[in-house]
Image 1: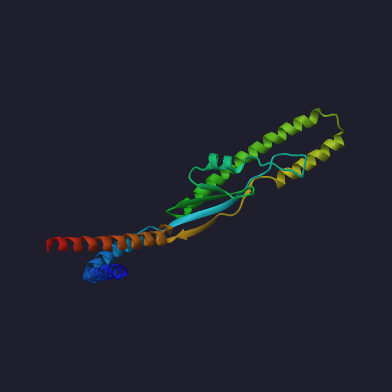
Image 2: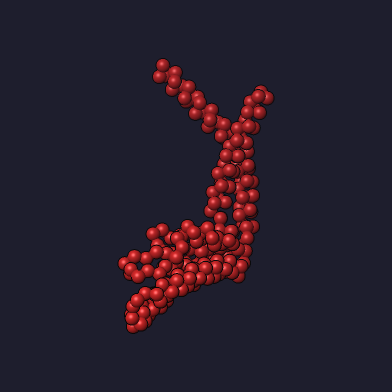
Length: 210
């Protein structure tokens, strides 16, 4: 039984070997033609530009310095300001990353800057409204003017330190649309499968003809 199985396996392996040797020319031609097309496609992809900046989300007014609450949570920031750019929250921080890709450097920078301006303006408005409400509330409290001045001074310092602001915008080039490795991997995979399939079909047609 083992001898018979071994013989069958040897015949099967030898047939496979003979098949590859017989169709190596077809397989090679198909593979290199498709590979050349893939390389040509990859090389003609335009150079893109990606601009990135980090935005530190400010905190709401709080008299308790040990706790802080963001003016808007990162999910809300992503939902409200992701027009023309991509906004990605940095996990476990009050930072969001704003990025944009365009075919020229200026456009990519402008897209990021527009999103940053929208975020900063909206959050500064939110903070200003909170501050105005707090000042009105402070006015009705029965405390001395000196205490009020001290509280307002603390509030002013908090306003400066907790304001939403961003880093400088950094721009990098993305040659071949930044996808050269993905395109080449897909090209090699498709070219290999297509070449083997072409060889198998040719071998099958020849076998049927006999």
